Length: 98
Image (cartoon, rainbow, N blue to C red; front, top):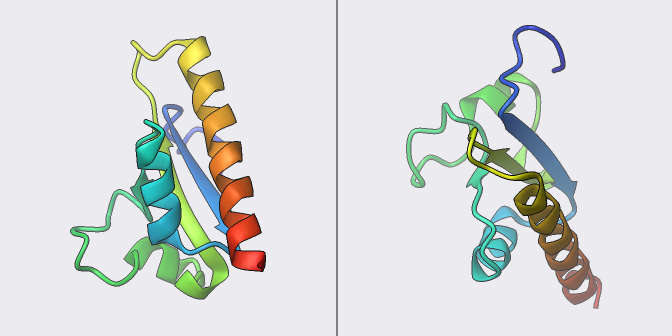
């Protein structure tokens, strides 16, 4: 959602067709750290975010990731993270389409 109720430092991303775990692992390996689901997911043992479930979303739709930045995060860091994110998605799409 975009509007006054949206936290400006958080970006939620849906990556259709890719499983969450392998994407989180690939991103971590290249130094890009994010979370799966929403902030309301209490632990890694919880199957799927209650917030996303309430929004009629399901894990079969692909990965749902949450990125956040701080006031100390630079534009260059965000750009580099975006490049690494795109590379990981491309590599995983190639592996899962094979």
